[in-house]
Amino acid sequence: MTRPQIYAHRGASQQQRENSVEAFLAAAELGADGIELDVRRTLNGQLVVHHDSHAEDLLIEGSHRRDLPGYIPDLGTALDACNGLRVNIEIKFDSPDVNELSNLASELERYLRSRAEPISRWIVSSFNHAIVDQIRELSPGLPTGLLFGRRSWLDVMRHAVVNGHSAIHPHESIIDDHLVRTAHAAGIDVNAWTVNDVERALELAALGIDGLITDIPDEVLGVLSDFQ
Image 1 (cartoon, one colour):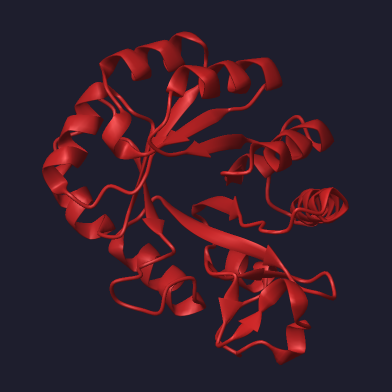
Image 2 (image 1 turned 90 degrees about the vertical axis):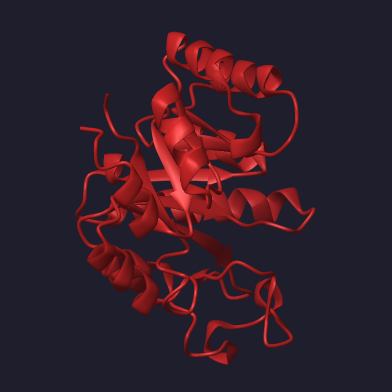
C-alpha cells in the first residue's frame, strides 16, 4: 500500500522553534515529505509565518513587519528553507473585514505564482473556507484544501466538490473508511491533522489517506516503513 505523505507540523517543532527556518530545515533532515506552516498578513501587507495572532504582545495584523520579532520569517524565506519539500500553507485570518480577506488571498496567490517552482508544490488550506474559495478562483491550478475539525464531513465534501478543491483536511479523529472512500470516489484527497499517535498513524495509512500532518514525523515515518 502507498505510504501517505508525511507533513511536519510547523516544521520539526519538537526540535526547534515552531514555524522557524531552523524547524523547516530540521524537518527535511528527519525525512519529512512536506512542511505545514501558517501564514499571516502584516499591517503593511507583508506575508509572514506565525501560528498565533500575536507575537510577544504584538498583533501581527496590526503591526509592521519591521516591528515583529526577528525569529518570525517572511513567507519567501520560509519557502526557501523548505526547498524540495511539498508545503501546506495554512492561511490564518482573524479579521471580519472581507476586503482584507480578498487582499490576503490575492497577495498570496500572486506571490506563489511569481516563484520559480511549479504551483503543484504548494497546497493552500484554511479553516476559513471563503478564503480558500477565493484562492481557487484566482488560480484554478493551485492545489487547495478545506480544513475542519469535529463536524459533519459530508457538508465539507460537497463544498470541496462544488468549488473544485483538491483536498479536505479533517481532524484525524473523525476519519474512517467511509470518509476516505467517499472522498477518493469524488477525486478528493484526504490529509489528516494532527496525528501524534503512531498507532493511529498506522490505522490512517491502512485506510489509504493521502497526507498526514504530525509533530513527530520521524516516529511516524518509522512505523510506516513497510508502506511503499
